[in-house]
Amino acid sequence: MADQVFLVNDREVVLTTQRHVRCDGDGPLGHPREFMTLEHAEEVVCKYCGRRFVRADGALAETVRREGQLLTPGEASGRGR
Ligand SMILES: [Zn+2]
Image 1 (tube, rainbow, N blue to C red):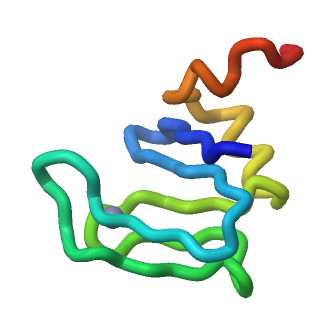
Image 2 (image 1 turned 135 degrees about the vertical axis):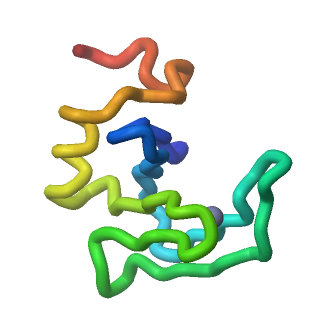
Image 3 (image 1 turned 90 degrees about the vertical axis):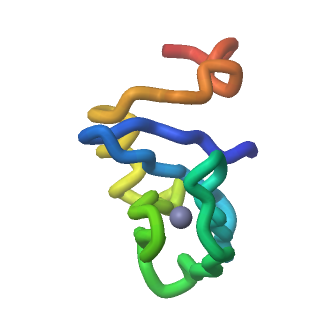
């Protein structure tokens, strides 16, 4: 399953099934590559840009889906709602 990106409180939150995530900031405000692991945490935050990565199978992900705004509508279409 592809990662889903939500907007929660004006911050990007990535729901991911990966245990190892990478962030380079995207766009013009990119930053050095930061590698993080979700093996021992339900959530990690990029120290450069503040983007949050949340395990898609965790309880926190449910909160993000409920309160966040989905930024990747292509992934969401075709799913029951
Ligand atoms: Zn980042």
